[in-house]
Image 1 (cartoon, one colour):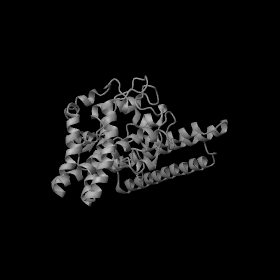
Image 2: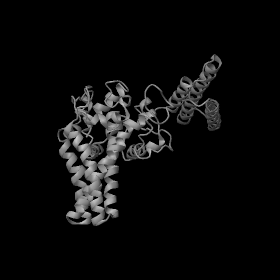
Image 3: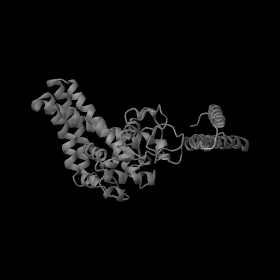
Image 4: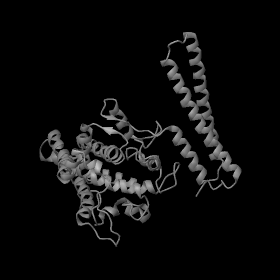
Length: 381
């Protein structure tokens, strides 16, 4: 269950949230020990857990976060319905409430009004803010309130959460294992235990991803990149990149970055279930990375060093500009063949391909020079 926000004076616990957040882990632990001792654990219980973990986890990361909060892409109604149902089963409140908190977090990161500012402490950012009673604020989500699927989910969030998050895995256990014992197996593993795991995986983005890691793209706030954290948060660990480029549907922008959420979103684009996937251009990302290194290095105290880095940035921008220009020219040459002999067209295309190759080599060389420059810097505290 997502939070009710803090009104600053002391710790006034929200009884409902506090009971849920402490009761579910206790019930999960007791249930798992009892069930394992009396019935063992088969691949069925584990399969139900994995399915619910993936369905609810991706509904938060790809759905609540990248689709609904940041509008990084569009999704067809069946996918939005999937996110609404299994997002409810994640027990992090409705998409409308979740996105309201999250949009406010991005708007005023690390301030007193940030719902889960890590500057108030790791525990506060991780779970403390959820336990504190206060005014329920829902704002800046008119676009989401206009979606009938999300409006319905918001009105029936607790019923949907109970049915999808607890009864559905229980019913799967009943069907696959048989009887009430099977129901308990699905309910405990796919319901109770899975809720705890998905909760704290999500909460780590608010706490750990603002505490440990690197800041290659911006030092304007506490967000950090952590490839390790991405391993069990569906790619959300590349958090410094996300805070810097919120409109990108990827958090791990490199092809090798572990980011199942971006692969999920991209995969559905092939069957037209997602569209308008927004990506920040590579030249913008590279330029920002260089600029951040330039601004944060404690060695940049001389005008000569500053000029060297600025020269790298300008050369990189020119390299990407030349690359774009030559690619467009090649595309235009291949498209407009009228009045041009085949031999002349072939010669023109070959020349443009050489220019494209030269531009790519130039960009690669600049990257090497930048990395060499970075390797020569003293480590920063």
